[in-house]
Length: 60
Image 1: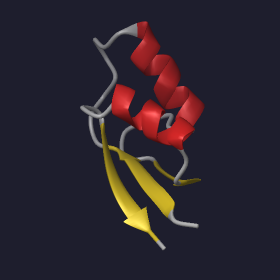
Image 2 (image 1 turned 135 degrees about the vertical axis):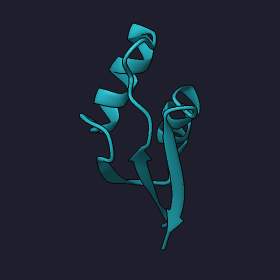
Image 3 (image 1 turned 60 degrees about the horizontal axis):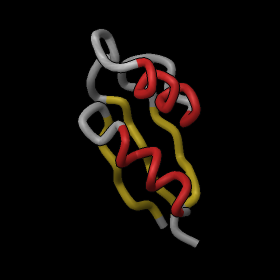
Image 4 (image 1 turned 180 degrees about the horizontal axis):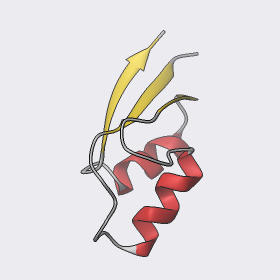
């Protein structure tokens, strides 16, 4: 199964509480943190919520 490499590229300061909570749920705590998650609809939806704060790459 493919994986997603998610990197936080922008600060969450000034964003909605929902966006902050989503970043924490993904495992991103600070700027330039990187996590690798399975490519599942749950994670795709979370990434879609904070798409303006993160970059996503597909990893095999």
